[in-house]
Image (cartoon, rainbow, N blue to C red; front, side, top):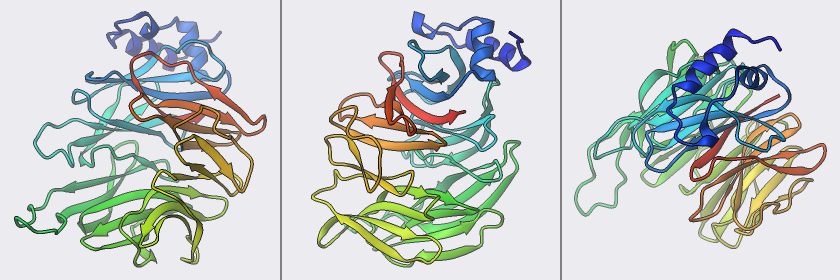
Length: 360
């Protein structure tokens, strides 16, 4: 087996992570080389033990029975939330991690980028806590940033107005501000072709806009909608944005056609547990607390039992999901479309886990 410089770097990083248990010890040079250089599909799994100030990243080969060696680690604020996404080049991982203390933690996170096999580099601060980095078509990444505005007057029902931005970074740190907004929140709902889809909320108003990733040119997709939208996901094949929302009649699932701005009501639901996600082939993965099942297509039918299944990654034959059960750690898992199999991943015990990508 040829051992690359990347694998050698992985060994140095894995040996410096301070693993405290057998399931986190570094592997041999040959093991690490095989994992990085590719011997089949691998899930990128982030793991954080409650209270810890380190998140560990593993490239977990599909079908393995034990957790793979640690690929890289990221230090952050103790028990801080960490979200990640594999970038388009399949070589870099973007991470948003809580890094700054303070009474107001709204913008206490930072953006980090790590080449697989190298230590993470910080690219930006003042990032929205618990937000997810959004990979861009050009290989870069977009994040939500901001600065807190003054608190509303005592007794007022006004929402705080913050100074918010959508910012793009390339892997070397070059920065472009794509959008500036004064309001309560922005949310990166997804990317379609070269446009970022952004949900924006101010006091008593919400809309959805598209930003050109090259220069930030804006077009309004939906000028007004109830300000309770959530669970956004893009169906790139259909050119649509799926989400849940609430109006005077209750909760419903909606589909926005990005090209035309036309909005369809997909279905009415009984309560807020009906969390939707776009499924390859035009389907909808719908949750009702008993597990996810695919409507309008083929796919899983509550394979992990009660809970909520969230689509995090779509990559060729593979869909990467997270199974959430209230009061328990989330469990990343994979669904193989060709075989219609649900595959569980070996995970370290006693940690929070999330899936950040799938390598072919």
